[in-house]
Image (cartoon, rainbow, N blue to C red):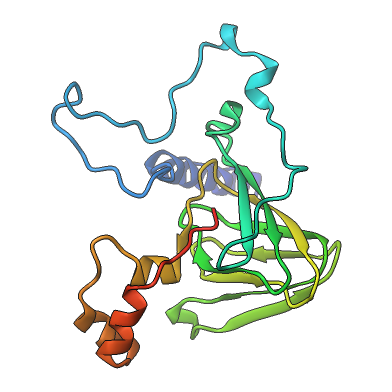
Length: 225
């Protein structure tokens, strides 16, 4: 019997090793087109590593998250990001952090993080939050009203949002499972792309009058990041 258990464990370990060796690391940018001439056209997926002998405590430090972001903008929110560009020591660790400030009735508009899940904690005020599952799961809305000290999780790649329903500011902090999780704000990407998506495409996709689509494409889509 012990021999059978040993063979089973060995088989599981062999399978795990096979999967691990075949798995590609998560991308850290929107795309990485292959090149045949790295001397002429070269971009690293991530960051180069500093010689460990030259590493200092400052490489793992930043400050300023005590300072509120400027929410005087069309969406009424501001995201202050601490990623690998702010703390070089985050490189390869797969984590980052944001502070989000919300004006009264402000929101962090529907968006996705293509490279990271998010866990958010409210430290001041009240937030109405939610995310939508994929087409495969029926586009279900998972939503909750959060108060100070409450925590909510947004799975990687799913559309999610936060809205401040109160007549007073709110503040939240969120951790992300990537050193550069990325952000795609849905309205900005669809109606504010450069160059614009053909109006006929959006008219059919959203079942809107073409004049409405053209109107939306002419608006200024603010980026709160």
